Length: 266
Image 1 (cartoon, rainbow, N blue to C red):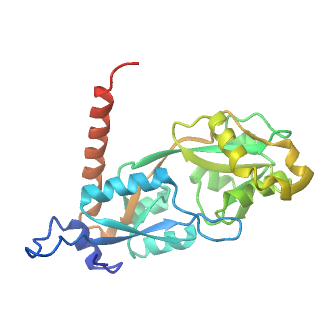
Image 2 (tube, rainbow, N blue to C red; image 1 turned 30 degrees about the vertical axis):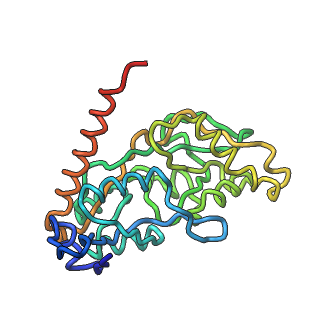
Image 3 (cartoon, rainbow, N blue to C red; image 1 turned 30 degrees about the horizontal axis):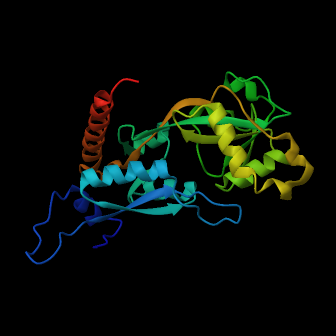
């Protein structure tokens, strides 16, 4: 498999429409580096990519005729590299500043941003104002949207930590924060997430001690109901890659819709 550098010819590889391989040699599949924010365990070591994200990336790569090579960094660094034109990035939320510097694809997948509290410290939530005076556990260097970012330090304070779900939920149990923000694939309910968190945290709770007795609650209304995930690249470096990705996403959506229509009714 041929690896391409991050700059220059990597874009040509993505736009490449097919290689006429030698009769005795297998076809060459271009490898395209892809900037992604890392997800860490409690020891700060990278965790495997979630299956939902891997499925999206594999589907798009197959449509483009390439293989994505994820290169994971803390989100602040991944954003800096993307803005500097180093390469394609996936999962960086839109802001006004980023939209001026980056060309974004259509929505590749959907997430909901849920609020998780201790079960003995829930509170009513329907709008950002309801976080007034709270300490919110977030991922260091990650943006949760312009409205949220503007409210940091004024409406509420944030406790920024590494991109480790276990670490942030442990801090919640220890009352270091009032609420933790967690992205989940769209379609999961608050109850689904509570069940997942109970299973995920079960082996970690004994080390927390009696503070873990409260358990977790996911507030019924997510902070964001549909925060899409996108591919993006510096506008000065986009010579057609985003258009090709959009066409690939459209073909994928059409196949999925056709498959749904062909399913027999329940």
